[in-house]
Image 1 (cartoon, rainbow, N blue to C red):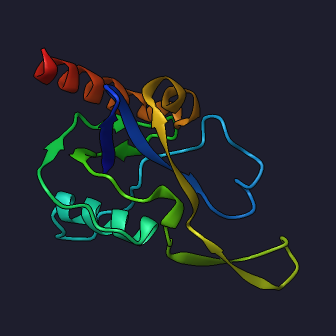
Image 2 (image 1 turned 45 degrees about the horizontal axis):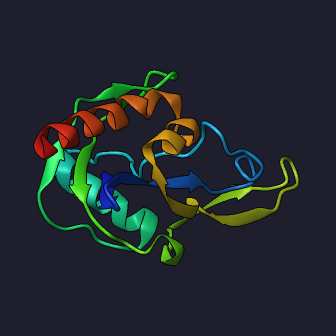
Length: 149
């Protein structure tokens, strides 16, 4: 789900940073929209809302506009919807996952799926987002510019 808001005439988008030790020191090109897997028989939009809630601890309501799916470098297809929202990025609470860490240590540790969220203007969002998702930002910008003309 690509949450956005307009502030002082500028488009801002909400991106999340993946949690866990692998992503800890990475920034540019690793942020993403809140997203995840669609369950068998699950409505894709319902899945997007569920994943948003799981990764941020917050619900988004209102009209969601389908965006053209994009393909990430690894081949994963991302279906997304744009939705106007104004959530508190500094108040997210993400679900957690367990993994062996450090590798081959035999110890399991728990990490948040998302360790932080932030609102970005489009130019900065394009620098931080997974490059396979930039098409979502481009389409959102085109759609919003058309509605404001």
